[in-house]
Image (cartoon, rainbow, N blue to C red):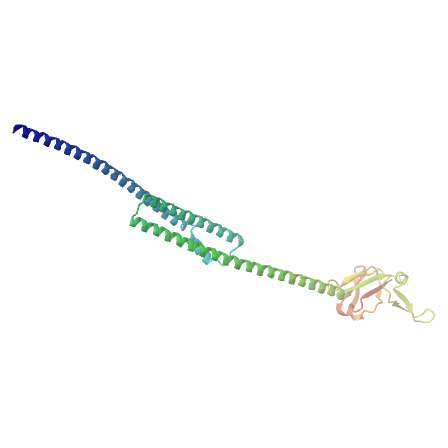
Length: 297
């Protein structure tokens, strides 16, 4: 009987030992599984934290696009107030829009990279996906702003081109009018000078006769002859005088007379120191006869 009981105890001990070993193995596996899960959780948390940081960084970069002088909002305000956009101003504005567009493109690429990383790591968090969706909306808004700004600059540049054409046409018109006015003024001055200028010569009877400018006519046997202009003006050394500018002809003699046909009341011979001078009293009447011949003694 004792042998049977002893045998049973031995069997029970073996069974208990086996069960203990099995439990120990299961416990070790559970600890390993727990450590693995804990490591995976830590890795997931790290990836989530990195994703949150990246989202925050992208959000900041998008906000910076609208800050300061380089921002799209500033450009919209400036363009709304801009009436005339010069070529330099238009080029500068387009350069700024290009910078903004590049910034938006960089943000868009960063969002794509973040989505690919999250997809590869199999991280699915509703809040994080909502943040990424918000980023995409911000990028879309910026892209829409760029389209509006580009169109606005294009409109202004077209207006400027039209204005520059109008200005060029206006300048050409003004230039032509100025040239016409100058030509007309020159023509008027030429006409005035032509009408207002007389030609005079002062000389002795002998000199003027030799020049063929005067001759003696009438009388009898050389008596009572009158000295008259021949009508020839080619051989004389006439001096021009603009009677609108001057009305004084000096005569280097104490006695002289006008033999040309100027009206007697249109001029006067008056003393000029120890000599004489002819002063024109009525320029219009005096210059009715263009050539003035003065004979001095």
